Image (cartoon, rainbow, N blue to C red; front, side, top):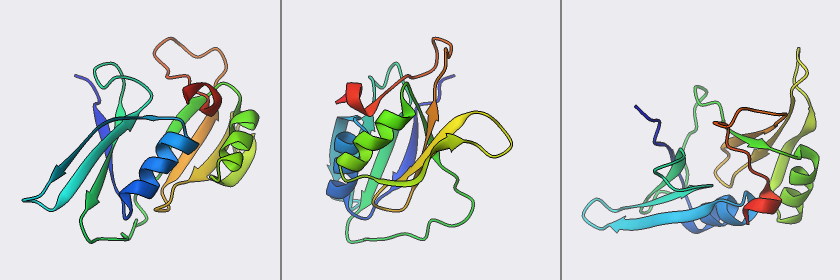
Amino acid sequence: MQLLHTMLRVGNLEESLKFYTEVLGMKLLRQKDYPDGKFTLAFVGYGDESDTTVLELTYNWGVTEYNLGDAYGHIAIGVDDIYGTCEEIKARSGKVIREPGPMKHGSTVIAFVQDPDGYKVELIQLENQGSNTQKVSAATAS
């Protein structure tokens, strides 16, 4: 078994694609309109879908916002330089909602950014993680 993707419903596909590709450095892997269902799917990620888990951005035509609820947590991305990555995200007009620093009750350095729909993305400072961990910096991903 393999975890394939996580789906997020988005209110403005163009804004979301810009955030995930230009701010977080992901690549648009594929996109398709489904006129009969009145929705568009766009898949973004840091690598090929056969090798890595990706995000599926679902745009339901005519729906501009969603109630995110209180059960959803966040997406997590490992980065090599969390401080530099946060500065680059801000320079690309991204919204850092928690500056880098140790997590509560622990020593792991984390930060949070927010996408245009209000979804939270956690950045985690990587330190000699195993080869199965996706190491990405916004600087090297673009």
